[in-house]
Image (tube, rainbow, N blue to C red; front, side, top):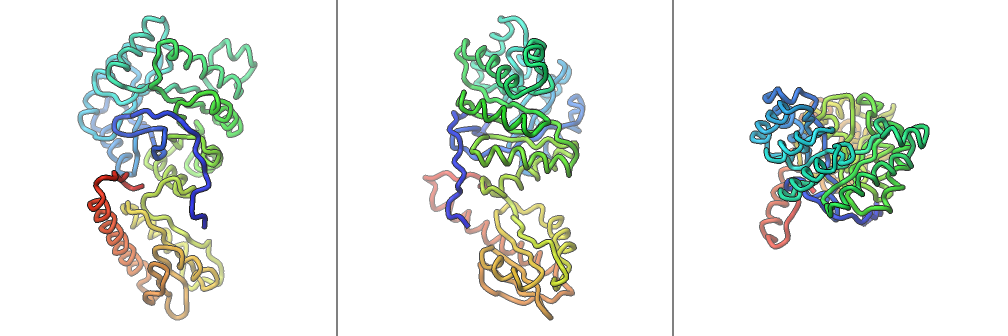
Length: 379
């Protein structure tokens, strides 16, 4: 295993979305978006809380009308996580949510209309230190760009982005971040790679309209993962036609797999074969469901036989290796105890929770003894 993460992140300036830093040397932030009716305040608050509990750093809320803006104000009062208001065309809605405590405006300056409307939003954002996210989507490019390029393309997306950026540059406003999303992986990759060298603003990653839980997870992992390996990306959303909580889970798994962030259990589990001495698949399904609440970063290996089991267990915080008649549990790389197969899941869950609590206490003691160096929660 590499002693140091080989990914060299692109240098970007930093913006603040509430108390979450995006860009610079900040951890890559994970986002999702509500799909409730924003005017249903109770339902939206409940979903935001569920998304936040799953590990979201930032949550986006669609605000299509002035009634939704007023509802947004009530929602803002009831949740702690930073909120982005998703607004299209109507600058008055942007001004309203800005006064109601929004942490970021997702509104494209080129789509607002007259210069005085754009300036009103920019000046409000400047006065209240609210960042703007420029969001370019391959499916909603300007008609002149469609005519010029014939069809959506990376070059058309980049030109659209640069037009929006130019508007903000002329108003001396640099508190913004940018996304260039398409449902096609190759178009998305090319667009982000083209823009990455032309601006130092933070980049919000995503494969838009990626699909359902399974297919969308695969497309997002390939597309977002490729950009992250290039060092591109400061925040991300995994867009799935699924419960938004699943977007956060996939986002965390993606960042954990690249060792860009850590939170909760990183399972190393074999796909199982006839050598297994216990039902690996059943065990993993149970553990993932039972241990979803653990936030302390730790590696847990679950291997069904002694071929690869000891090697994986020795480099994990905890590892289980299948054996006959009992399975061997390792802790901190060393054999600790044997576990009978008839109570395997319960005993393993208890051991993992004990180890997570031990690690959490050790981390809290370290933070308390080093107050001069702030630590990031779950990183």
